[in-house]
Length: 237
Image (tube, one colour):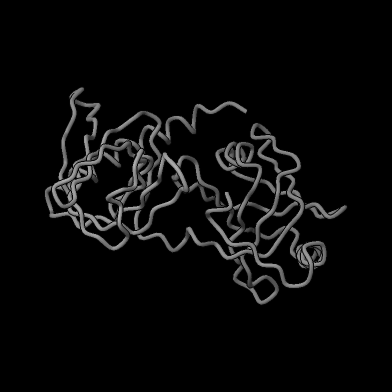
C-alpha cells in the first residue's frame, strides 16, 4: 500500500493519530470516500462513520471495499469536503467483516494520496506475459508486471541497455482470451527508471503508441479489468 501514498508526520505519529481521532468524533454519521487497490484496479466507495472510541473508528462500508481492506490491512481515506477534515489520511485495519460490511480502523496518519494523480487505469498481471526490448541493435527479453495505456513495469534479468531517458522499441505479446491467441504489439517507449541493485531489475517504461497499438493495448487492459473485477466479486475472506 505504501506505493500509493506518502505518509505525512506533523507532530509525532501518536499525536497525529490522536488529532485525527478527535476530529472524527465530531463527524459521526458522515460519509467518507475510501480508496484501496486490488491488482492495481481502484476500489473506492463511500463509507459511513458509525462510531469512534478507544482511538478506533468503525465504518459501514461496501462489501468489496471490506474484502480489499482485509487483504491490504490498510486503507486510504480521501479528504473530506469540509474545513474540519481537509486532509487525506490513512489507517490500519483492526477488524474487518465483509459479510456485515463493517471495518474498524486504527493508527491513523496524515497522507498524500499519490495514486489519485494517475492518468490511466493500470492492471496487474497474474500470468507471465513476455516482452522484448530493442535498443541500438540489442535485444532484451522480459516479463510484464503491470500495464496501462501510458506505460508498463517490466522485469528484466539484465540492465545493460536500460538507460533512463533512452527511447526504445518494445514488443508486447498480449494474450487475447476471446480468440485463445497471442497478439504481438509493437510500441515506442521511453525508459523512465530502473529499480534493483541486482537481477531481476524492474524497468518503468512510458509508451508513445500510435493509434492501432493503443487500441490493442486498451483492448487487453479492458479484458484484464473484467477478470480482476470478477475475482474481487468471488473473493472470500
